[in-house]
Image (tube, rainbow, N blue to C red; front, side, top):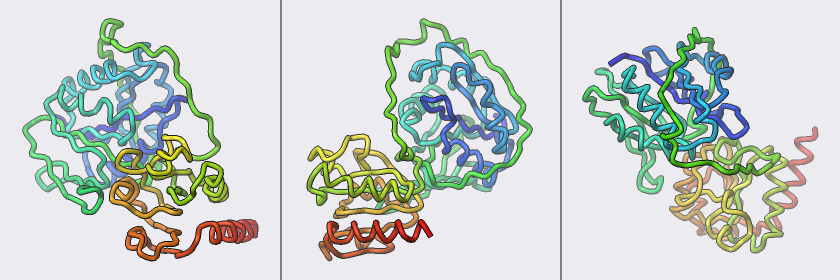
Length: 327
């Protein structure tokens, strides 16, 4: 087994590398030692290798294959499994994105590795085993776990916004690989891909998030959330109750059955703070809540809280923020 630490790049539909990839590269370089390398899978992606080198990748393994043009688990699992078996890295990391959640467990199974998902911290033990921290019990506790090494790679995914990305030039040696992916390996064919256009940041990568709950009472009232989010340059989120009530689309849902976020600032408006919702945003650095119920559980988890009717609090708060930000 080599001492290489691998970070698998996550490519968005528009062809750009997700920010979480640079975050994980930076933290791996800071904490894990050993040569930090990147893995680039896709079609027409070779030109992205220099971006990964800019965040410390000493070596970039590239599998550029037409069968990887559209994400599918078949191709990505085979490509990464072949690379891991060939080069035997010590650790394989990636961002905990929708793609990684789909195929990383299959890769772990394919190479006989342990797997830790949605980690919020990474480190290495004195004897070279990966140590991670992740939320457990619906984010009411953080558990520290260590891999019991048996010669296989240790695989983990990391929650976006857990670390700070930091540019640092690496050697950037490009190693072109042929994982032998053919048409016969691909059992799923992507017919069409539609992306939702939005001027707001992507929810899972946003540094600021403004979320609304059932207390907004209507789809129209969610404009209060959108207005504040746009003012702060934030993403807009919601609770499951608000989504189920039809106030906003499902892709805004934060929580146990929605998306996990870890922003610098999380503004919770008319959100009671159930365990299910907290499991998706509990790792936020600063939580600000607005709720008219002084006994709402969210207040116990907030850094700042305003007890009041959102319809009386939010409009003047938004106006004051506009004035402050325009100065």
